[in-house]
Length: 134
Ligand code: HEM
Image (cartoon, rainbow, N blue to C red):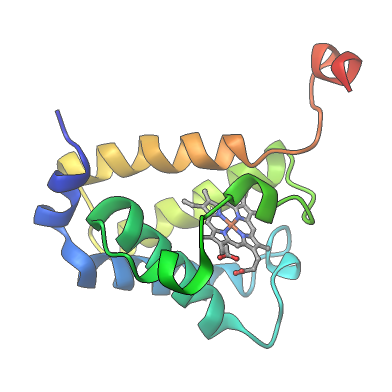
């Protein structure tokens, strides 16, 4: 069963950095999620996601030292994240992983990991049941 260690062994810190760079090259020009990001801080966005993944996958404490507890759901509340935005984020990351040749067990683990977090970031009700709860 693939896990965080599998990802570090297979692609390592440099592989994660290359994947994140390929992801933001796409996000910048994306019509759905691109406009949510500050247009003058793409390097900062890249650094924050990279640090977060190095922390979450490789136990590197840099993210925590710079940003504190991740609190990702709270930090994404200012943005309107619906199924369309979630699926776009995931599609751009999948294209970035294809470009940087993230395959095999690391890819399987990352696909599940990214879906889980992206789905958790949703903050717009989509179904009748969800709308009733809100
Ligand atoms: C579901 C669709 C998503 C959208 C539309 C989205 C959008 C954004 C935006 C607009 C920002 C603020 C700009 C920035 O700090 O770069 C941000 C920050 C961030 N996002 Fe996402 N995001 C999504 C999913 C994810 C996922 C799946 C992850 C992790 C795997 C993630 C990790 C982060 C991190 C670490 C930050 C920086 C938090 C901080 O330290 O301030 N995001 N995101």
